[in-house]
Image (cartoon, rainbow, N blue to C red; front, top):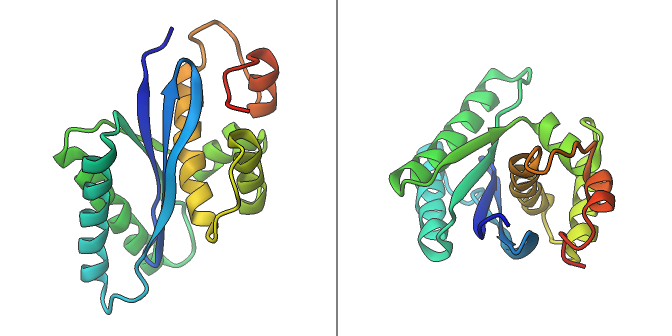
Amino acid sequence: MKPDKIILGIDPGTNIMGYGIIHNKDNKIELITMGVIKLGKYPNHALKLKKIFERVLSLIKEYQPDELAIEAPFFGKNVQSMLKLGRAQGVAMAAALYQDVPIFEYSPKKIKQSITGNGNASKEQVAGMMLNLLKIDQPEYLDATDALATAVCHYFQKNIGDDGKKYTGWKSFISKNPGRVKK
């Protein structure tokens, strides 16, 4: 049996940053909490980064995650946006490092592939899978389900190979492991 583990997932952003926390308990995943950090009201990037650091630190102190899974910045055409997103990710990672929480980074494509079986899935498809798998209600912001998907992707990736099974996505995982996902 795998040990109980709490995983904090982060979907970095400079206007809205999503977070999702799951508990791997008795080989099942359960939602602890998810939400967003709204950053649009802060007048400059430095204040947004400070708020990200403080809020991620408070989530770590409150929920005591064993690991942090974070979405890696994607390559886009706007260099300034990429730099700002990278800083937001770095500040969230710094908060975890400050509390000695191990960090695991996943590309957006890897997260989508792990959750839906399609690396090009839409945010809505990822959210739909999270709602179905964890039997939760649709949040106001898809950034929260993206963060939750990052945590679930980490759980999924850390459990591949432990029993010698290979999975092509969550549907394959569930069919080969009845009872491991809360219904």
